[in-house]
Image 1 (tube, helix red, strand yellow):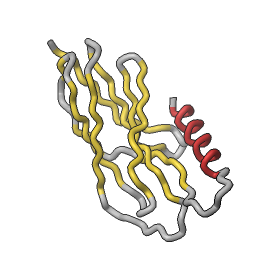
Image 2 (cartoon, one colour):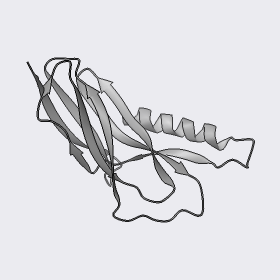
Image 3 (cartoon, helix red, strand yellow):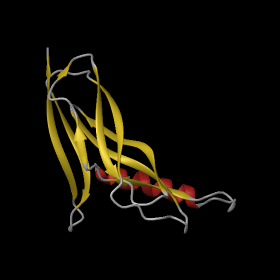
Length: 137
């Protein structure tokens, strides 16, 4: 699953790095770990909910680029996708927790399992914060 992410990001990096015009700023995409999550304890079918997540922006060259969102039946894998400007003028940002909100529309019964990506461990294995949210009537 995360292999798809790495492949997609690698492809995007290669495409953006092959620019003929060097006057335009170069950038690449990078996933950022989700630090905190706020979501309801239960869902109702047919309703839309806001899932709020928090993440750290490593430098001034990082900007929110949307959510990486993968679904497999009732399982959702979510990460922050950032756009990173390739520049030498970036300034390190410390302890600046940013937030982003994902609108989630409930379309299935049962429970949803959310896997929020939190980075990789020392063995380069993905780490996820998993939450199961039941759908009630």
